[in-house]
Length: 225
Image (cartoon, rainbow, N blue to C red; front, side, top):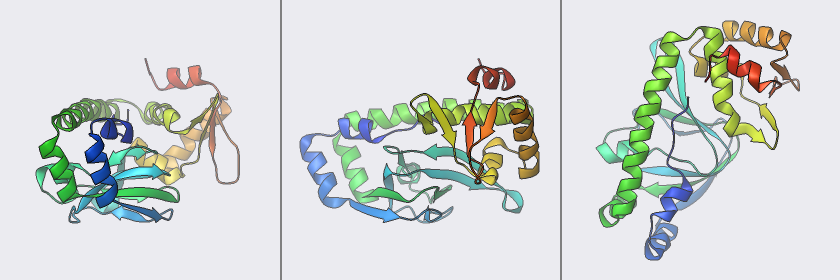
């Protein structure tokens, strides 16, 4: 359900050795703390980011301050490049879910790389096309599925981001899970309680970290093919 993303591997594989040297020389590696904003909605887009370590949530703020999270970024993901392409301000906000390390790529450098590298342009076009297709699926999910089905779909979509071997532990807050599912925290908590009663999930610590217990039941509950 989450957008396919352009990542560090795809980005770097599109660059020549000389361009990689240029990237190293003109980009900046920064460390930031959990909860910090990398950029905010309507901010000027001075550049984009590669997430080297940590996790980030990308969200849009709607009516009455309600957030809609549409993407979770994990190590290797690139984000914040859309407004560089259309020379607009950031359309969303990026907040760190963990202490993180990021590589900041100035917009001037990003444009120079695009102008000189057709492979990079094709890589971005494919990423944008895949994002559009995924966004349609996400909008359909939010519009047509029940809250229970949405919560299960969200948990299933988070598995690749948090899987460690055979285990899946999801440490997201209840507020973030509610924002991802397009519901309110109170409703989310009731759905999670039901899923625990059905042994689909369990919580593993005082912070409410969710462990996926039965993937098959989760997929059936979310009407996931």
